[in-house]
Length: 130
Image (cartoon, rainbow, N blue to C red; front, top):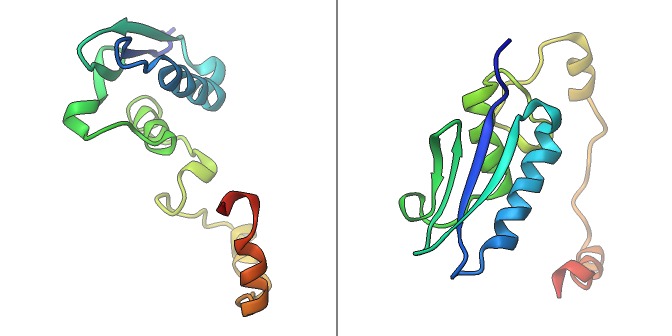
């Protein structure tokens, strides 16, 4: 039996990155669940923020220029541990679509029309645009 992957998130306590680290751990656990052996938060100092899968660095804040988006983090974990795994919406347009007859049916869906100026203005006032 192969062991399940261990993910470590090393974060800077001086920079108050605990919540960011915990959120990323939650995202990984929500996506990969019981397929993961462990997701560990490892406190550090000096601006450290690094994510490793079984000891292999997949993200380092200084090297990679900031913090990863959840989507990118999930893709990097998947690419190392389960390269053939589909992440659904997190993959967006990066994965090749299935070539069965059901996917052909989905391609022929209803056409959409752009929103009118009035509808666009109405949408701009939503809670996410403030």
